[in-house]
Image 1 (cartoon, rainbow, N blue to C red):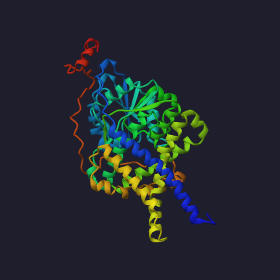
Image 2: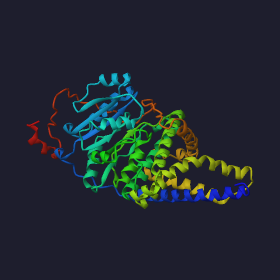
Image 3: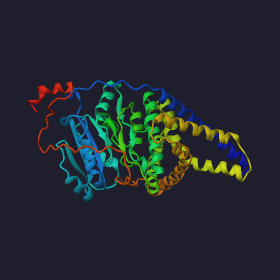
Length: 445
């Protein structure tokens, strides 16, 4: 660095290029695999009495605006009510959300659980507290703004039924419903489409560790208990629990029916949320590599290396996108040097992202959104810098994302929720032949 600074910089650039080359090659592979993937055959409808009891945990904090839509959406799930156990987790010192929940006429399968105040004020802390009250063999997580597809729980149970014995979690894809609100919302929607329709399905098919989404994942409760639940101090508990399950020998699967989510519509919203994500991913990566040989032995060499390529590669890209743009600009305008391989790498990276975007089938893969994707990438470097600062000053601070601020939405309006005030709801008439299996038990109920 001191004797030959230019040589050191060029060598560092080559090392970084090699790392990016691996990520680009894998992105091309995943995009081609997504294009060639055939739709999975539709699983036969499971008899209601053969379905496991499903506990749904919904953490709520300052979410009064979205409570009615949330309750309606969960009430419309195609799952027998006597097999549902819905827990609304409200902070005991959040009167606004508590009032909004009390104003609703909750179906009988709903239960409100006040979470005692105290540090850390995080979503995983609330989940750990509520896990002790869960009655289901399967535990699902929904966020407050979620609108899950009605057939999603049955699809997840079908994946469990045909999956291996060590299948511990099924992730449903997340789909943005308000991409029309702003440029940053469209880029966010395209990013989600690539993540959940292209990247994660291939990792799941290969039985590699996947970075779970923070919602719409279905866990086997015994697996959750075995690995110790969620890390209450990690601000991206989803990524952490996904890797911890892999260290215990578990694998993850993917379901097809999506959950509609709301994207950040402003720079400030996006910046705060992405800073928290980057900070949590860095926490997760550091915890994984606290004892690297132990982690490698537990996960296996292939899983360990793939985690560095996915989680570590994402962190590396977030750190370096902005500096690499500046380095290319400096070579052009300051050093008057044209390095062809710089442009080749940038072109290949852009081409791999374009192919992945097209393979995702997202309606937001428009020419303008795809063209301006290059301007979206370096924004992550600013959030990564903020994440590094927060890691030192406030590592467990949870930047709250405000929901219910979407300007334009293409999400479907859910029908009114059925009212079941202390009345056992028998699902008559039986509209599906599979439901006829419930006839013999209906009298007892």
